[in-house]
Image: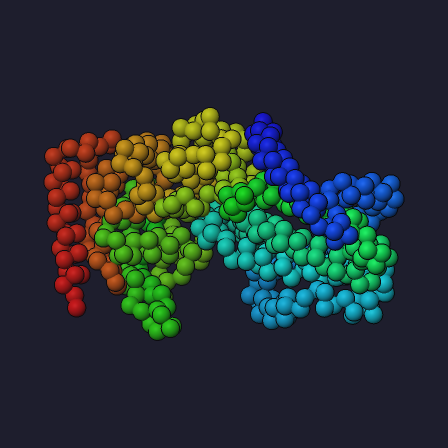
Length: 255
Length: 260
């Protein structure tokens, strides 16, 4: 725990310096450009205060709930599916082509269909996030199963382990870091999917905020939405790095 | 009854493009006695590990018969514990203690007995204060000790050791050999120990099986090492055996190189 605290303080300084530098550059540049296109930090701060007293939290909350719901459901399907495909050759042969087929359809392309099927409410958004999560998590988990060290399986077999023990004691823990890596990439996809979906069909969410601000040419609001997205992505990725380091620091190098 | 018997065993692996490759071992016949320390010695690539892999039950022979205590080997089992060459068989996500307890947990041993066994084995291999460490925090020699303890936790009647000390430095290797002799003298489990190091075989074994150069390798000679333990590496009779075996191995390697 002491090491973790040390790490935080070690990171805080360079991050702080970078932020300070970026904000200074931003301020400097904004003084030379029409604020309608490129508002400075003070204008954006005022937009933030205006939005924060309004429904910024609601927009962010709605997007976050959509992402997390779809992401968790997608992972809940993707991890077992990947384990089955990696572990049982018949299932792999049955599903491999299907997974590869759907994996290359961009989730955004599914928006129209999602609305036709599930309406303009939450269900269509969650469906899109599941769609953008499930195949990535499946493929990465499956890959994790292939990377199991053969001698580890043999070692437990020579201790009397049956197929279920081999799965529980070797294959599952070996696949966890790979599954987490897949989830980490999927989380990035979920962000871009939800924003696009909300820009097209939604009355709430960060994507809606962006679209709405564009209509009224409120560039300050747009900046606030973008910063919120960046911060959310940063925070979730941190959580994943911590999880990966905790459950598989040995195999997956995260920096 | 023998601890293990190989009867005219052949093992061929599929070659490139599925074409048949020459077998790794062929017409391999050997009987290992109960409670003996048997070293299988041979030039690299002669199929020593193949023989061990078959007796462990990880793979099936393409011809011939393998018996463990008179029963045909059908697959791997806790009665034949395997110690692997590298350290990649240790679970990096488990501590030393939890690695040792893998076998007892598979057999659903009661919890209090598990802890007692783990502590006893950690002490036996000289790692009493290291049970809480992960493999990455242990040295090469310590990791091999954990492998030995992990196998002994299952009380196998046979230990199959595949060049377990090959990756260690000379100092650690000599120390591990002494400790293995000490542990084996206490437990008196049958050991099949694979090595390409002549001196290692002579320090450890009751009998040494010399293999021909591969492919299609088999046992060439079996020599008894009738010296009291612990053995002195400079003992004149050990040294003369060493020279004798080196001569045979040189002949084997030269014979292989003379092949077209």
